[in-house]
Length: 140
Image 1 (cartoon, helix red, strand yellow):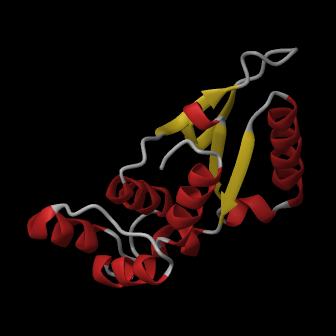
Image 2 (image 1 turned 180 degrees about the vertical axis):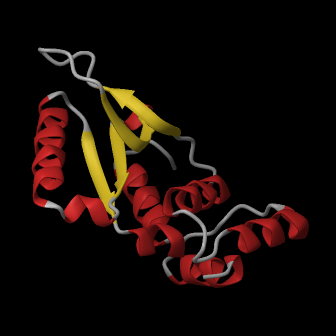
């Protein structure tokens, strides 16, 4: 999805992207394409929306016992952890660890949003994140 397509989609949904100027818009649209890693694409879409985030966020130190968990992205101010699930997440052992990690995070007060790579690349995930943050009044 190009930035122009994404802007049109947001307009239909009652949202608008901030103007970044034609050169920045062209660079962003060129950067978000199917060959790009899904997490990088999601970061680009969040940048377009002006949503701050942390990449490869370490959490779990406050758990008892402390754990070294890492999420793809986080928005700590919203206590939100974001995962882009790739192919390994469907493997039974990995899935079981993911579920345990997510459940422990929920007990510690974190919220989780999980997306497929296609959702991250297309921009769908970033719009969902924006709506989540608006619903929690983290952003206007």
